[in-house]
Length: 566
Image 1 (cartoon, rainbow, N blue to C red):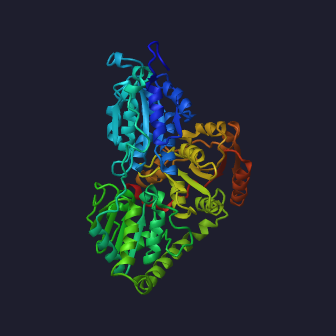
Image 2: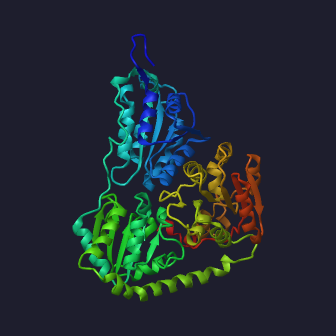
C-alpha cells in the first residue's frame, strides 16, 4: 500500500506470509492472539490457509504431522507467553522426531522490552535447547529474510524445528518494499542430499555381498528422504531380511518375502552383518546393546552426531538414506559383484527361512489373543481387527501407551508413509493433530487413528476442529479407564495395593463425546462388533470415535518388560 509519498509499503506480517509462500507453505496452524494477527492478514493475501485450533500444542503437533506427510516443512503460529509455552511440547516432539517445522511466536513490542508487557517471556531462551535455530526478528525489513533463514536451518543435518519470535511492533510496522529482502523461492536453500563417502559405499557393498546372515533396519529417515524405492531395490537385489520402525514402516508391503516384524531381536542376536538406517541407538534400540557383539555393524544417518553414538560401529556413513542405499545397490551390480544377485543371494534362503520360522512361532504364541472372544475385549483382538480393516490408502496413526504398544506388533501399514506415531519423545496427544494434518495434506487418503483413552484426553477437544473443517476419519479409543503402561510398572514395583495411584481414569463414553461435537460415535463391548462398527464409521463420512472397552488387566509384552526404561 503506497503512503503519502507514493512509496510502496509492506508490513512485517505480510513479509512473513510472502516468505512462507516462497517456502511452499500452504497452511498454517494457529490459535489466535493479538500479537500475531498481521500474519493472518498476509496469509489471506498470499492464499495460505489459516486453520485455527483449540490449543497451541495441537497447532505445533499438526505442523509436525504436516511435514511428515508432505515432505515439506510445517508451520504453526501462536501468540506470546502462554501461547508459545503451550506449543513447547509440540516443538520438542518434532525435535526428537527429526521433523522440519517452523513455530512463529508473538512477543511484546520492542518499545516495551523488559518493561513487563502482556505475555512477555524469554521465548528464545526456552526454545533454543529444543530447536535447530531460535531467534528474534529485530527489524520489520528482516522479517521475510529471517523466516527463510529459519527454514534453511531446519534442514541442517537431520531435519528439525526452528523458532522465531516477532515483537508486535516489528510485525505490525510497515517499511518500503524495496528495503525488505524477500528471498526468491528455491534460491536460498542448497540441496542437502549426500550419497555418502564413495569408499564407504564400496565397503558396505562388499560386506553385504559376503555376509551369510545380514539384516537391515529401515528407520524413519528412509521415509524422510523419500528413499523407499532405493531401500526396496537394495533389499530385493541382495535378498536381505528387512525390519522397519517409525516412519519407515510400510517401506515393504505386508507379505513381501523380505518383510519381517516379530523376529527382530532374534535376527539382531544372530546376524553377522547388521545395517541400521536412519535410526539412533536410543532406548528403542536398547542403546545398541541388543545387537550381537560379534556382528559387523553399519550405521547410516543424516546426522554425523548420531553415527556411533552409544555403541561402537564398524562402518559409519553420513548421508541421505535413499541416495546411500541406491549407491550401494549400484556398487553391487556394477562392479566386481556382478552375477552375485543370482548365485550368491540364494545362499540367504536358509537364513530367511530361519527368521520366517521365528516369526511364525511368535504369531502362533499370540494367536489365541488375536482371535479372543473375551469381553472386556483383549487389546490384541482390537488391533488385529484394525489391521484387517486398513486398506492400501489408510494412513494409520497411533497415539497412546500400552494400546499402541500392542498395535506396533500387529498393525502393518500397506504403503510407505502410511504410519504415524509420536517418535522417540513418546508424546501423548499427537493423534488428533496428526489426523488434522494428514486429512489437510492428503484429503484423498483414509485416516485411521487408534487412541489410548488417556492419550485422547490430552488434545481431544480438537475433535471439534475436525468436525468444523469437515475432515472425516476413523477413530478408535482403546478404553480401559487407565494409564495402563504406568499402572503395570507401579504394580510390579509397589504391589497391588498401590497399583492404582495416579493412573486411573473415569469410564468415559467417548462415543457420546464424538456425537456431542457433531461426529459419529459408537460403543463396542463385543469383539464381534468391532469390524462392523469400523465399517459404519468409514461409511458415515464424519470424524468418528469407536469407543472399545478393552481388558484393563491385559498388558503388551513391551509394557511387561518395561523396555522403554531399559
